[in-house]
Length: 444
Image 1 (tube, one colour):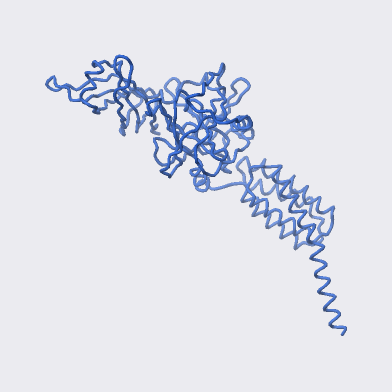
Image 2 (tube, helix red, strand yellow; image 1 turned 180 degrees about the vertical axis):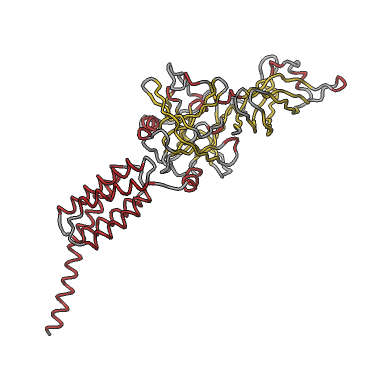
């Protein structure tokens, strides 16, 4: 009888222990999740949850409200150290700072097994939170980045650009990509579907930012990082979707942080083609720290990232979508890019069109010059020629892709062909042709 009583007492004691431990574990996990989310809203749930498991081990070994408070405090302080040090791209220092803080507050635990368990789990959690491989960053970014094709009232391409999802059905990009367009559509990297642009939900002319609403588009969003924490020398990745082809992923560094009046602009070394303008610039955690934009000035193609903090502020002002054709974009009195050159597509220009007249018979064949005004060679020029009559009405369009290399400061003659009547209708005038340079690549 006594043996049975002892067994029953042990069973009841075990149940009592489990019951007593349930509340502190649940409370500790909840506090840990809240603390982690308050500190770093863009961190993934996985590392936060793992860290929470580690602190639950402390709770199991130390049934004390004071210890639970210490665990939460250690989480906050350690997470802060880890984030700040980790932003310098030094993962080891970040984890070390995290562990030092936790040991300092939790070393009073009398149960070393629980402490070791917590330490091991925290190592896993902070490692997952601090850095990702370039391949991991690229894979996620491609699924959230789009090609933007903006068209005129006649449905012809006016400009190309990139964008990325910041909210459900909404993408951010550069304002100059959509300026003057009557309509347009977006394509997600690696997909064939086209999503019409419903309109603009937010715009910041001074910082060349715009948020667009897409019809029926569904994709994961990219987390916005803290651009004010970016430092010169930090590794960044620029993602784009030039010429409607598969996405490009370029690595570079932050070469300088320019002050433009009261604003700041990140200058980066990662190359940005005109068609990649408006794409995301990511840090080592896969967070967006800027919106890419390239400018042309004095023969140079300059690559910048408009800080993500400005985009965060803009998203807070978003309204119902207004159609492109009905939206009057107010030109900023002072643009952040005003003194940094014109649009990057101005680095290549088309000119000097001439008709081919073999035996004085018009065949529809013509040639023109593509002139490279940059100091670097370019290739894969993608352009559109619009032929107009004397009244300025469009007669014909011709899409031309030149895959050859155009040396710096030089030009190449390009040939193509339209209907044989176009020359007569345009009265052979060079001024009747509009050259739209949509994209090109800089040869490094």
